[in-house]
Amino acid sequence: MTIDVYYDYCLAKKGVTEHFPFDEDTLVFKVGGKMFALSSLQEWENGTPSVNLKCDPDWALELRGQYDDIQPGYHMSKVHWNTVKINESVTDVFVKELINHSYDLVFKTLTKKQQQEINES
Image 1 (cartoon, rainbow, N blue to C red):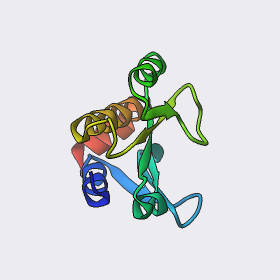
Image 2: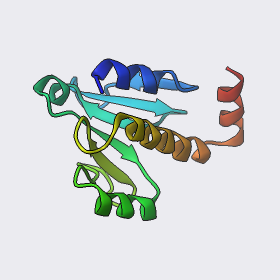
Image 3: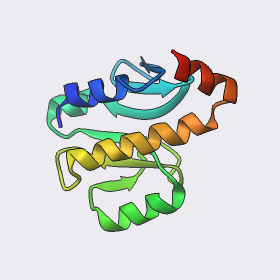
């Protein structure tokens, strides 16, 4: 997966905005003002990209057991976030599924009004 594919895939989701709230390196995607994906641009340039994604706690543990390239979230809650190494053992198709899962988890936490506004946009 390239940075362009990752970027376009995340940004194409309904109601998604991009931000750099921490520094000039960490690209954060949000829905309804809440993070669902973040990644270091420098790591993409260095050829060692990874993405932090929100995940159901039980599934997060299961995924970490199945894939060496899925680890507890770097600088995030280890319960709710995974760091997924890109272009390693996790396929691009599965990375997209994990992005969808993260987006859906965050979207479900939004108010009904926020969800409706995003769905109607």
